[in-house]
Length: 133
Image (cartoon, rainbow, N blue to C red; front, side, top):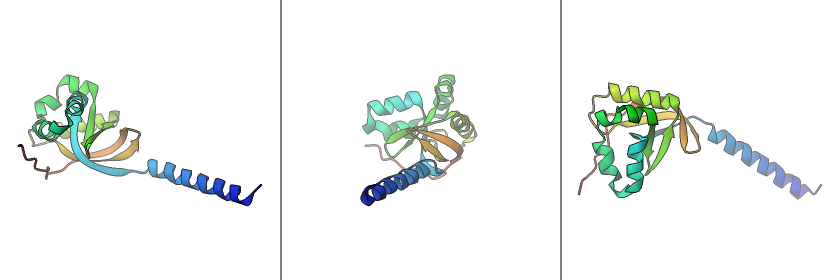
């Protein structure tokens, strides 16, 4: 076999293994917890996302329909869905929060496509301040 082809194949396999390893590594994200229905509202009007996120109230977040449909983390102008463990942790975090709206958190886990396999969720005290114009 041609030595260049062997080298190219080995380089490809190594790059693939690095990509797979990176994809399965635990990491952190910081953003807002939001239920999937509210996330659809944000997707329909991305320019209003900051206003919707900062006004997202505890009673809205804990509605039975929100808990049934699940939650996501809105981060860097896109939504990452939480797995079933993440949904349970999101409900606990929202219930225990002193905040009445805008649940700003740090999520640790492993990203799988557009979802996060969640290990932990921790509320962050300092939510970003949004200017309403």
